Length: 332
Image (cartoon, rainbow, N blue to C red):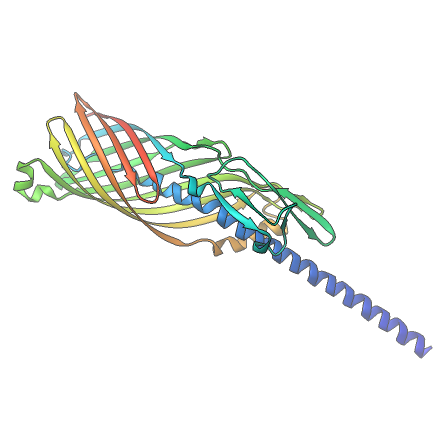
């Protein structure tokens, strides 16, 4: 009797140890999967968020000269961002992953969010069930164009307030939106020699909020959808611009230096993203990718005044190249 009870106890202990070991293995596999998803998210989205900051930095200052008090300008602008080849793709190998492997390959090139629509399969094993999905596509565009509205109002003492708003712009595999406001102050008003020579000097500080979203990973498993269908980045950026201009009859030629600092916030959405262990877990770990970044860029602009209108073209350059074209109307 005692011998039989001892045998049954040993079998129960072995069974329980097996369950614990299986649970630990599954938990470890999920951890590896999330680490791989985090690695891929970083390489995929960062070029697009960096580009969003550049797009939001362009053409805030319509003119370096002092605006007349209560003068109101309304403008419609088109921003053109040129996607550089170096930021359209990145290389992955099986050594980069803990859970996934590249199907039928040890190494390959895949698109970033700014890249083309090529895809490869990544495969893994989760508790005996195969997880297999296509890598996300890029926007597959040579350039990104979006329109926005801008309004500026002259204030007393050489100050000027500016507001900017764009509707949500649809991309081939996502969307983009930006809004913000800024405050400019003219310094050449304090130097009569500059005003006499029609040379203008101004400083401007701006805040912008950029939101960019992309289709990401729509993956079904035996444990449910991973909940990673959409990847969204929200970027808060503070810009600082110093600009110098020269008026030549109806023209104004302006050069400026821009510095900005951005904070990034990432989140995934999708089927069951709020309840699936994968969606919840990856959102808990996404802050590991968040960081503060400084950018520095130059800007060259040309402004032409005619009647109550003025047309402006700005060329912003640095890590990226950005073109901005606008037409503005002066109400008062």
